[in-house]
Image (tube, rainbow, N blue to C red; front, top):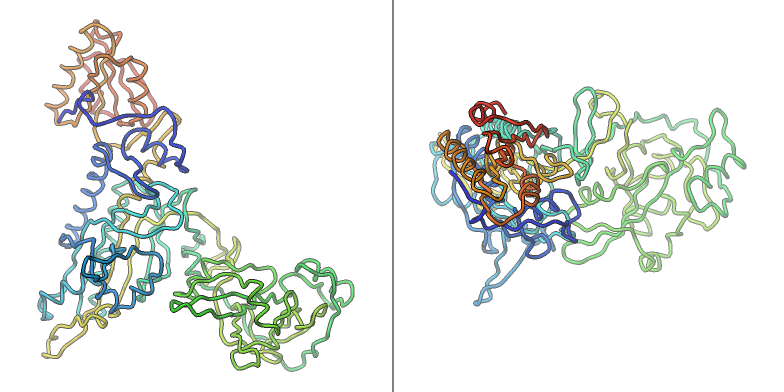
Length: 583
């Protein structure tokens, strides 16, 4: 097929759009692939749709090869299914809710577990109907607070989501592995580097959860990996817990006057000066920092919780959001401290904390705070700390929570070595949902014994439009986009330059020949556009192969560009077909 630029709905821009923060957003708008309509919302233009269609085609092929069948569910869905699973409330402000003229509640679907479960419930009733895996490629909607990264994080985006339905847990394991394998094939065909990491299931729920992350500097996810093969999103990382220590024989705690110690380091320096220890000096890791967090529950109630963690660690708010989900988490403010006078800011200690204490404030600790460990911490009195407060003897926590920051060099929980930190962007996610949604929605089938059995589900998502942006991030240079062949909107971009008809006649013959060889061709036949503009547009648009018919046309010579490598050579027209096929 040949598309002529003189008729293509396209305008390129010389300058980056002012509201674009990442390279992909700048280039996709400048090159006329997308146009911003509102924050996080984009119109798709012909070139953008062609790239998207190629990505979707690869996904469809692999999903169908894995036995999944395509359907299409509505993006506008009623409240009731989400109410049944409690996600109408759990999603909080993250979804778009609306009412129809009869005051009935709807939402723009952020995901479709409920509707797929109800679809299978409506049509299937026997174990003989299962297993089945269904998928769709559909737009999703989430009210992102900061949609500033173009297609990498939008309010409207396209996903491929698939759902498997099995009678047994063993069947779910097989379906899950089938989809996981299909994802590896998809990302390999798309040319995307990926890491498979353990992940938190979040609002999706379920047991097993893994993310496919593409390593990228602008990635919003931090993950950890070890040389021995461990990999996990930081939200799912589990601390290697030290062994408990004997309590018997440990010295009693000692009060330590400690005015003017506003930071952990000043406290450590003061303790080493006035209360030095035998054997080793006090360090930040020996202090017990008690951080007060405010949790706002879905019903609006506000609760304080104090988290004790080693003083050389900080709270990771993303890990805290996972640990305390679905509550919103923030640092306690001045009003919170005024309401709880027993919390002496800067000198909080665990002695007065706990759900059963007079304060009634829940106290949870980092996994490193095991029984028998002795700490330098607050004494709940201004200007006073206490040294040698022993966990399990002098204080007992209400629970353990994983919210401290994860650092390079921390041990992998499986013993596979120290961790390194990497940044990535989620391109796929696979979940074993289990029976959470089926139970809530009454999805049951008759088993082999004629008894009703609750179906078990898996959920599998790929961010289609995000992948397009990631490919644009990975394949560009200072001149513009440089698409790999398998996703480029056209195979070859032919450019005719010059004032006379010689170059245009030659270009027409080249286009006809390439079309006969079944290449998709973009032909810049614009008669009144300067050669400089045409060539800059060719660099910006980023087709993998560019053929320029210009000054050498009268001698049967064209210029051949490999846009990916940057190589440019002059080629006789008689050898062009062979040269193009070699790229």
